[in-house]
Image 1: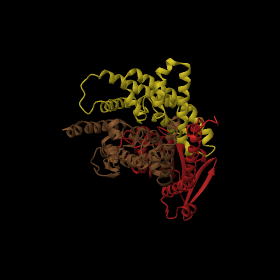
Image 2 (image 1 turned 90 degrees about the vertical axis):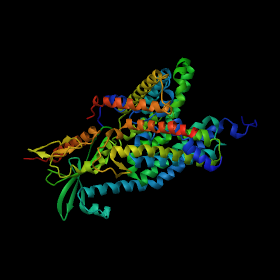
Image 3 (image 1 turned 90 degrees about the horizontal axis):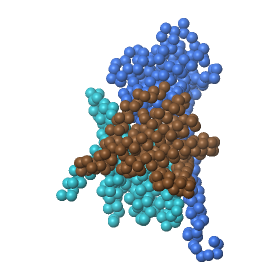
Image 4 (image 1 turned 180 degrees about the vertical axis):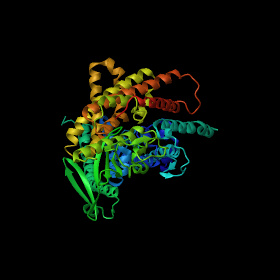
Length: 199
Length: 208
Length: 195
């Protein structure tokens, strides 16, 4: 596979969210605002790319028995860097995201990519795979949060677009809507879109 | 162990050695990164607090550090910390840090009241852990600004504000609550009520 | 924080279920909920690990990390404690109770990466809980998680052979069911009034 193919495969065709429904735990809760989703997506992408690179660089040296521990340690370190960075430069955002930045560690996508790709491939490829998977993930978050914020707050990225006449749908701000939005997204992608492609 | 010819990477102690090495390296990187940014985070916290205080009293904050020292005096009476704001040698109000439990954790707020301790000048939320997008909206300015200019004394007693639905128009003693987050809205009003009583108690303020 | 620990316990089970309102622990929730039996096994394991790791992490955080000013390392420490605890329990169970090992032990490796476990420890720190509050919050969250996965597994078993539109099979439908369950759980919000 060329680098471009790796990117496209991990970002779209094999997108972890809609193919395997991985990694939604850490971020679904912040998808009621687009800004939070964007930062969360970037944080995951950063962690994915660099942990992929690091694990791939070390892949010949990591002893099999402590593999999981080493991966967790590497991932956690990058997440802490993201956390400190947000605290130092975007304290407001850091507060808004609360514990969810730390929960990137247990995002199954990162562990999954480390196991499935970075442990077996060249460093640069692994990094591209990580960026691809991260951006694919961010895309899903942004799509969900776009609709939740639009209907729930009448705004996009914090800018009011629907005006005062819009009656805010509280349900869109609350948790259940995230489940429904994700289900609808998966339905559209796995159902009609996939069926069309097969013809 | 020592004499057979297994390469080190296959030996039993290798995983332990590797774990320790990698832990040391990564913790080292993190510690350095933390040290570099620590001062910045701390400064930022103090500056943003001071800026909040200044903006509560509608004071200028072009040079936060100097302005804070010029206008604000930190006092303590009967174990109660409070801030006194002066402008042209005239006391324009008092500031108090108040806190209490919200739906999920503590809510820390800061309020400015008029010198006669009758009216809220402004209220700001310093720290809260309410649900993002729901209770977290207590930090939105439309919610906080409702408290400005509100008189909290009635017939010689401190009274709590009444909550009304978000869409309603508000009266003098009423606050519009956040749809879907009534508990958090209630918490803010309740903390305000309890803490105002506490402050009046400690500072010996009486209304006749 | 002067909230009654028992209220936190009840709230963690019903009104703010860690899974249905905070989406934590979704991955294993969706993949294991096919069968009621394995759901109970995983649910119990989560409950058990959650209660104990919250207690351990509380002690470590307040008596080691805070005094040594190492709070910024909390993520690494928490996840290592969780991983080590899970590993330890797995070894103990394997040695002493083969029966328990087959009902509970096989799910243990899944737990380290269950976001709910780390999530509870992080929430405990952010919400400034006391020790008792933390432990009851952990136990309540574990029970709430067990309740949610059990309910989903029951429903999925019932509709196993029913017609489901293409594209919704599997994850899609599970998410919709979970969404409806989350709506239902909002109905509980009246039972706990946090001052």
